[in-house]
Each structure stands twice: as C-alpha cells, then as structure tokens.
Image (tube, rainbow, N blue to C red):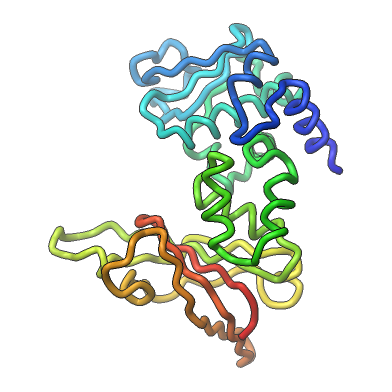
Length: 276
C-alpha cells in the first residue's frame, strides 16, 4: 500500500471517521482544525495577493489559525471535497513547508480540477479522493458487484460523492478493461431548444490500466452528440441506456464495444463495459 494511502487509512481510523459518508467534522476535530464558510470576494484581506486580481476561490487553509475556509454557496459535495483537499495539504509535511511560506494557501477552481499539472495540488486532490472514498473501500465494494454504471449510481450517494467523481474512481481502479468517456454540455444559444436537443462535446476519457494496454488511453474530439441520440424523450436523468460504440483507430483498425450511457443533465457519461 502506498504511503499516502496508509496515512489516510490511519487518519480515518484514529479520527473515528470510518462510517459512510466520511465525516469531515470528525477529521477536522481530530486535527484540531476549525471550518468556516464565507464569501471570499468580501474578505479580500484573508487572501494572498495575486497582482491586481482577486482569484475565484473554492477553499483555503490558514495554517497559523488552523482554519479551513470554504466559499459560501458551494453545494455540499464541492464543499466536502474542498475541505478534504485542504486537509490533504495540512497532513503533508512538504506541503506545509513549501506552500505556506505565507499564512494562507487558497485553492481556486484550477487547483481543484482533476487535471492540474501542479504536483502538490494533484497530491492534495488524491488525498481528498482517498478520504472521500475511504481508501480501497469503494473499490472493493464496487468490484464485488456487476460491472455497470448502475453499480456506481447506487454507491455514490452512500459515499456522499458526485456521480462524476465516483464513475472516475470506479473506472481508473477497475481490474477489467473498462473506460469512461465524458462529454460536457454545450451552452445553449437559444431557449427554443428542448432538453432532447441539448448537445455535448468530448471533455476527457478515463481508462483502467488493463484497457490502456489492450485498446487506447484517449479519444480525439469528434462531432457534437445530442441527448436524443441516446435517450430519446421522456427519460429521467438517472436512466441508463445501452448502446454499441465503434472506435476507429489509426491504420484502419476498428473496435466495437458494449457501453452504458448516463447523464446528470449537464454531462454525458458513456461507460465502456466490454468488447461486443
């Protein structure tokens, strides 16, 4: 087990935060940290100076005051992940030493995104995910059930996780060759378009280690997809539909996959289950 996972496992155990969903208040209390929420735009003195601009902040850690602050108005899932992210910085000795040469370290939407290039921000995100999914617990529980999007939709609420973060975790930790294609909603240019006409474009692809070895690690952006291409009309957002996917590789090679498609209304998730 990697050292980071051992630290998180010990923290969860010693803080008494092993029930689901992970209790951030228990961990904060154990670490002797306070948690506050306010509008950062009205508390500019709290923030480190970044030229003439006030950054868009989601969460921040004041090391000297031992306070984790989150932006007021965040939904509960983003707030919890922001808290776990700042805890990740706090429990990492290198982060405390290198990031906090000023009292306050603030995290913007950029540093909290899964694809950040900054190593210590990525590590804090990884610790946050370990806390959210309680190390290997989510993976063990999900792999004991059928390989399906429906497994994730059932488990995600138990962990207090968004469907997107749970689908990512499920895919990247899976033992079988599976993949997740995520498409983001295209902003509407007119209110005349119905939900069924809503378009989505490729945002990113997540693959399991075994899938990458056999097939591919990513896809190139193609034509926009419409919700009606998969769901037709009249379905609720939690509905999962099955559809075959054909992927053409360079050199004329072609793969066909069985997939399951799900939308949370603003993103489209196509989960590759197996070859067809």
